[in-house]
Length: 262
Length: 293
Ligand SMILES: Nc1ncnc2c1ncn2[C@@H]1O[C@H](COP(=O)(O)OP(=O)(O)OP(=O)(O)O)[C@@H](O)[C@H]1O
Ligand SMILES: [Mg+2]
Image 1 (cartoon, rainbow over the protein chains, first blue to last red):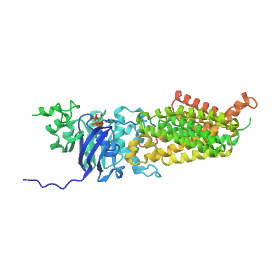
Image 2 (image 1 turned 135 degrees about the vertical axis):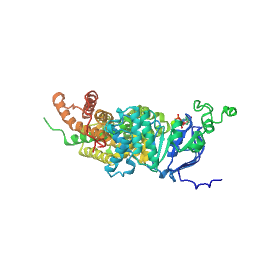
Image 3 (image 1 turned 180 degrees about the horizontal axis):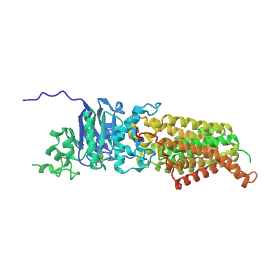
Image 4 (image 1 turned 180 degrees about the vertical axis):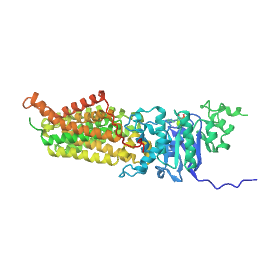
């Protein structure tokens, strides 16, 4: 019995023919991608596959050579403030005079016109965000006195306090201990249940299989994208990572090993 | 003991406030040298303006200084965009000695071809000339510091967000380019306002020393900027009194003690003392988030 084709779900991110290059070396090649609204999406692929490039491009931090990008059904120019982003490696100055609380508040600043002082509502959102990442106790600590994992959690708090409908996180669990990671993954699922969309670059394929409902397999091109159950299979993974599954990122998806496939 | 001249006193306070404020911003942008470059490039600007017009009116000279300062500022920004590796102090260091050398070249050329340069008072642009300060100079400096203060206060969240993490500010929809442009403009204007009174050497030293002095004791953007500004004002207030005291103790008649260098020495001493001294990390809870309800 053939299934009725479902009406196309609303896309939170839509990319058409997007190609991005550093100099003359392409990092993303002809990417067509639609990520459904309200999904918890994992982006996986070997080092250098272009995951970070993809995140930055769809946020407008990098200009693609070609292609069109839509966020939440609108052009990039209109998406300001509606996307919260946690970068993989931040180039910020950790000596900056700011406390953890200041950082958490920064997420709320986009929704506040310049003539209004920070009010109860903003403080509540910042405090809730700090509670989510378990940093309330350090709210008054200067950010240059944080451990690496605490810095990462502070950045997560800044993204969470933004109350954005879409969260984009590039390897958010770097340097974060296992129990905090589990707590934050639970938090992600809760956010998804509340109708938010999340796009997470994540390397642990087991958690992806267990917790993420949509997956994008990337290696310069989009190898596969779809519901995790049907997408994260042996064949696609091999096409993404090469035959030794993730151990050899230098192999191109259709490199010399292709012929050796059964 | 005599009291300092009112215009000198208020010009010093104004300069302290202005360069404390602008210095705190350049400090956070990791552009400590930027003020230096803008000040140094104002020097050839003044000379060229004088050479072209043959006039010594403050407006003409200030215009020349501003054009050159702002021009060099644009060159820095442009170089940094083109070569990200120059971010931080690279581009500044590159242009710093270049702009001063340019000034010196113009200076020697002009001395050869123009008469009466010695009386032109152009040298005061190096170390300032507090003795000749008039009330309009004081009002200019105080006014500029008020204006800059008003802007920084009004847009404190945008400014602090942009200076801390430009990408994040951009995604929030904060006006990154506009704010950066206006801050650049304020710095160029600020440099020009104080150039003749304070002198470019003094001015760039203040831009560096004042924020450095307060950084160890502040942990939020607001307190840092405010403390740097206030410290500048305070040292500006003390300096003229100190100059009078030194003159009455050690001065020779007719040979005054220059105000600008005393200002810088004070600021530098405070900065060094504060780096080695105890830390007053303010316990004040700026955000109030950590407080249990
Ligand atoms: N600033 C840059 N200049 C030049 N090339 C770059 C730059 N950033 C990334 N690249 C190249 O683009 C490709 C994609 O990089 P990207 O950072 O997107 O990979 P990634 O999938 O995020 O990798 P990882 O898992 O290590 O984070 C890589 O080959 C990298 O060498
Ligand atoms: Mg990456």
